[in-house]
Image 1 (cartoon, rainbow, N blue to C red):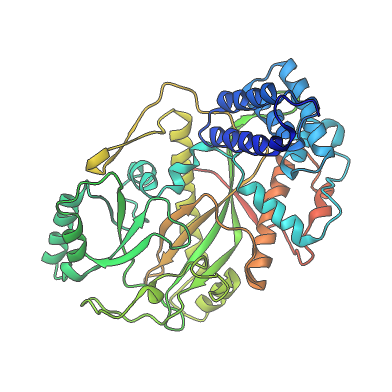
Image 2: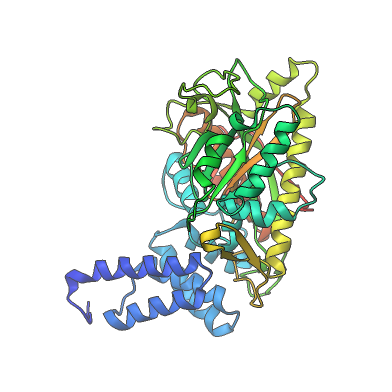
Length: 462
């Protein structure tokens, strides 16, 4: 290679360029990402591009402009990347560009086993080429302050919460009101959540009294969400459980084919999901026991090594509820669908009208959201994004939304969640095929071995 730097340094420069460009993409800065790659090419003077960087630049050119020249360049770069098998994502984008020619040909990934295919599709869900504004759902504080607080207050499906330390006075007033109603507010249990924690990491269980002591005089740039713990919880075999519900989202955008068709956002709800159990039986204790209680409350399989967590599919939950005369799985599912419709509907609305520009309140810990005059960044409308909505049920069978996960951990951890996750991934890509006019039958090459039927329900965001 004729390089503008010593050849041994090339891999390090290439990796640095890829990471810097991906950081720009995460922020929706497509122009900056292209500039990073252009500067890398100028510095290295490389004649034969690395396939991963070629594919990345091809996608960026598509997102940056609809000009014929950029499309031609993107087509060449993505074709080169596809032939070198660097990522299924680049191959799929190239398919989407050429779908009028390729829709009668099977989507061939690589000669590999089903486990590898699942891993590759899961990796695409974690890629930087998703909707950059999804952090408004993933960030616990932004979800609370931006999306959920803008939904009709008369519809309660989200536990009471406060952003601390900025809302400590509101928190105290709320607790005193609760005390008037006969509660012991000092020892009522709350969950402190770091804004970007995953798998229950960054979550701490505490009492209202301890929250007040920690934040009454606090001045910190690090805001936390203080959320009321759902109580009294529904139990199965004496243990708390949460529901992982999978939602497939396609962003609004221009189709990648030459016809430049405008594609609206689409949302699907999967009937496949997981029931995640706490490892210890729940003891109703509102008087402040000193016994470690995390294992009674935390249900996420991401805790520890993830292999010891007890999980079941939604069929298990249906069977449990059908044995209880007063409970209805269909009623529960209808409520979950309504919550997803409202949350995704509000998110899509805020995204389209330019309202999603966040500003941290600094020492106060409060978050404000200001309307942006710029257009939302372009997204790939042909790539499915799988989100994880986490719910907990109370004793009245009401589901409460706890959080939304942008990266819900789609790599299997057990035989139980392998079946569920493979089905969700495959169905998401079947929906993607349908979205670009590609025959679903041509996707059978990546179908899971134990696949039964399509699990997605298309819903209209409200």
